[in-house]
Amino acid sequence: MEPGDRVLVRPFFHIPVRPWWTESYQSPFYYPATVTKVNEQRGRAHVELDESLYPTPWQDRIQLFHISDIHRYGCRCQECAKPGRDIYRFRADQERMRNEEQP
Image 1 (cartoon, rainbow, N blue to C red):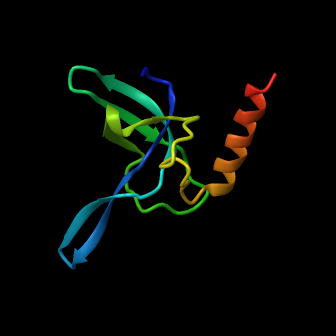
Image 2: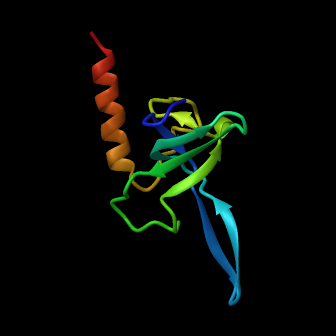
C-alpha cells in the first residue's frame, strides 16, 4: 500500500449520547478514499475520504486506519458489496472497472 492508492474504508464518526458527550462509531458501510500516508512500522495508514454527494456524519475526511481494515478499491468481498450512501457513484465505478478488466 502506497500514498495515492484508491481504497475502501469504514469511516469513524461521533454520535452524541449525552448533551456533553459523544461516542465514536464506525460506519457499517465502506466508502471510497485515497491513501495519503503509510506508517508500515505501526501498520497504519492515513486516508482521505472522497467528497460525498450527500451530507456525511464524520467531521474529518482524513482518518487513520489499521492496514488490515483497508480494502483495495476494486475489492469484491462480501463486506465491500455493501456500499455507503454514494451507492450510485459506487455502482458506476464498479461497472467501469469491470468493463476495463474485460478484453
